[in-house]
Every structure is written in structure tokens, then in C-alpha cells.
Length: 135
Image 1 (cartoon, one colour):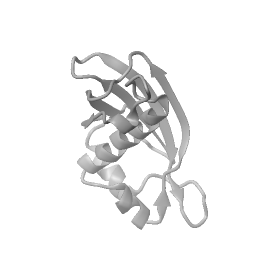
Image 2 (cartoon, helix red, strand yellow):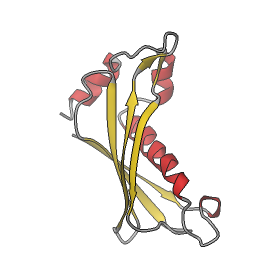
Image 3 (cartoon, one colour):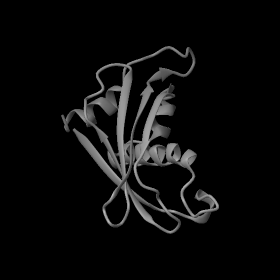
Image 4 (cartoon, helix red, strand yellow):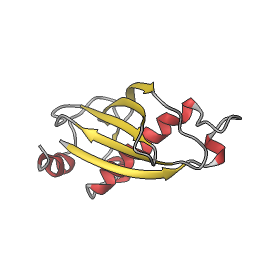
């Protein structure tokens, strides 16, 4: 299992009139978590794209348990529970506030695809080698 954490401060533009994070912003939080999780492995989305591989989101699920509020410092925990042994990778995300209360849970599924052909491909070998050390 691979796990990563990153923190963000909730700024005003992310909230609605009530000071609550607008629900549509959670997809961005998941993306921040995924991007930073890959970066913490010493790899980046830019590296993957340079190989001619793109990673479109094909499925997103989330559940809202408590609101994140303006000026909260939230922790985005991103987990790969299973080694992605094909064209699919599933990120599990939990978001907590400073009091360690669980605010949101979700999963995001992406495919590895060849950019030119839009055909599914297996995870890049370089990324697979790095991730294999966690499983």
C-alpha cells in the first residue's frame, strides 16, 4: 500500500456564501492529492506526459461527511490500496480538518492511455518499479 499526505489552506475563493467549501472543489482536492502523491514518489504527471501517456479520470465517487470551512487547514490523504497491474489506477482519498475530523471520502479511477492513439496502456515501467517497493 502506498500512502501520501498533503495539506492545503482553504482560501475564500473555494467557499460559497456561507464560508463552506463548494462541493465542486473536492475534485480539485483529489487532484492535488494525486499529483502530490506521485511527486512524493519522485515522479510527476509531466514526466508521464513526456512519455506520451495521459491519465484521464474515468470515474469519481465522493461522500461529504462534514464541511470544510474558510481558513481551515485540511489534510488530503491519498492511498493506493492495490498495485495497479494494468491500465487502471484507483486513488482512495480522505480529507481531514485540523481537529483530525474526517470531512470527505472518495475514490478516483484513472486510465493510462497512449496520447496519440487514445488506447489504454499499462502503467509506465518506471512508475511501476517505484510503486512496487510499497506493495
